[in-house]
Length: 88
Image (cartoon, rainbow, N blue to C red; front, side, top):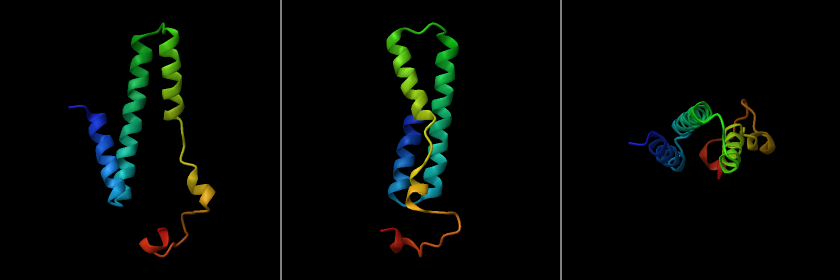
């Protein structure tokens, strides 16, 4: 079975069910799988053609993305939002 596909489905289900800690865990797994795939491709194909180089650069950019929306919304680690209803 494809572990990345299964982890993606689990991450989506956890997010919909507001089980955010489990969703973040699956997201970390997905990022790990993506990094492994990138390193494997670079190791096995040292000379990439132009199309593969474009795809690999896009994938690397996706891998290096950080979660930045928390800072934009003004969240901090100590802020009490008042529970579930405050998030809606």
